[in-house]
Structure formats: C-alpha cells, structure tokens
Amino acid sequence: MQNIFHLRTKRLLLSFASLGVLLFFSVFIPDSGSFAEEPLTQKPISRIGDFAEKEFQEAWRKYSKEKDARPLKEWFKQHGTVHIGECKFKSLPESEDIQYLSLDCPGKKLNGFFYSGEERLRSPERIDSFRVKGPVKLGKTVYWELEFSADNLKAASSKSIPGEKSNQETKLVDKASTVNFGLQYFLSIAKHPIDRPTPKGKEIFFDSSCPLLYLGKDADFYWDKSLYYSFQASCLPDSPYSWIRIKADLSGNVLVDNQPTEELQEGARYLAKLKLESVEKDKIVWSDAELFHE
Image 1 (cartoon, one colour):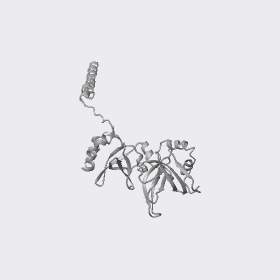
Image 2 (cartoon, helix red, strand yellow):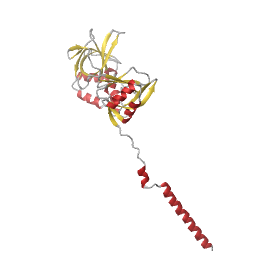
Image 3 (spheres, one colour):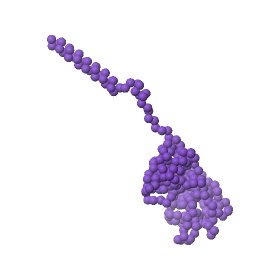
Image 4 (cartoon, helix red, strand yellow):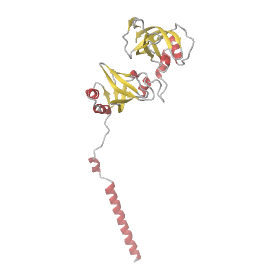
C-alpha cells in the first residue's frame, strides 16, 4: 500500500512539472508571428548637410525672421555633418566662457552659433564642416552649440588636440624650407620666443610652404596712430611670433604685387617678403613689407 501511495505521488508531481514547463513556454516565448507584427524602430540615416538645400534656407528663414527654431533643429538633427562650402566662420567679440561665431557666406551672414570647448578657436576660418550638438537658449535668443572634428580643431585651435600625432604640416614645412634660410631662421626663433639680439634688416621670405593668412585691419592709435594689417604665419600658429603686423603707408595701403592697395580679403593667403626690425619676447617688429598673391 505504501508503494502505491509513493507511485501516485510521484506521478502527480510529474504532471505538475510538465504543466509548468508548458505554461512557461506559452507565456514567455512568443511565436514567430508576434515579431512580424511589431514594427522595428530604426534610427534615421544621418546625411551630409549643404546650405544650398531649400529645406535649410526655409528653416533658417523661420529661425532668423520668425524666431521659430523647430524646423532648423529638425534639419540639423537629420544632418550629422554640415559642410560650409564657400562660407567662412568668423569669431565675434568673445565672452569669458563661450566663443560666439558667425558664418560669412556670399551675400549674407548667418549668426547664432557658439563653441564652448576648452581651447579657443584662433583661426575659425580654417574650419570646413561642423556638427550641431543642439539648441541652447541664452537670454531670449536660441543659439546653436557647435562641435568639430579633430582635424578641424587641430587647424583652428591654438594648441594641438591631446592624443593627436605631431603636426605633419609643420614637419613638411621644415623639410620644404631647408633652402629658404631666412624662413628657416624665423621658424627656429619662433619655436623659442625670447628677447635676443636682432639681425636688423634681415630679410625673411614667407614662401608657399608658409604663406601668411590675412586676419584683418587693426589700429594702434595710442602709440603711433597708425593703421596695421594683421596676418598669421600659417605654418606655425602656436607661436606668439606667428602674429605679423604690417604697417600701412600714409594712405592706408600696403604693397601687394607691387601695387598699393587696401583691398585684402580676410582669410586669403599671401606670400610675403619682410625685414626684421626687432625680436622681443612676445612679438617681432617688421618693416619694408611686400605681399604677393599665392
């Protein structure tokens, strides 16, 4: 009798176990048809943006004229990278924490951008593309926070990006300038800026391996009431000596291709022949400048 009782109990337990397995599979494992019924949510494909697109122009009109940022936000969202084409970034008067930027395009200017990276963009005109992190409301205005690729930051910032290899362009310049002894001398002292005896009158020729990038006009009315044209030596942007000021003549002109002119385009590159006047810790004073189109 006891054996029969144990046998019945064992069969009952096995029945409950089988029922539990069947319930598990029926509840937790859906059939193949249930997957087909659920739509797959796919991430939108990120495209390269172009300012010439009608969608962008209309979205920008609504943002700038009607203060409606929603269409532009959607356009930036759909375009991971935006190429600026013929436009050039220009830095606006800076604040302590962020750097405001505008885009100068043929026939128009696009305002409303800013960059808040650790390094200031000394040469934003070198940037050729960007990504928008998102809209940020500053005061009553919606601005677009930008981020850039490592290559663009390397070209536009005052310091190299951590983890990047050494500047290949500088290495190329060093190699290309071995026969240009004047430029080779400038590169040597620019890497170690200190007060030093000046070979006054020494001529330096900035050739195609190190053209000057035109930044704009500036004046020094406090000291000598003169107008200057400011440039940057493109091959050595990290040195204080890379900032080169050329004094205008009494008519406000500089010599370009042997012709006096004041019509220089910001961002343009020029070959140049200059003479050293003095070498100080934070600057070089130049004279007798001649510029040539590259």
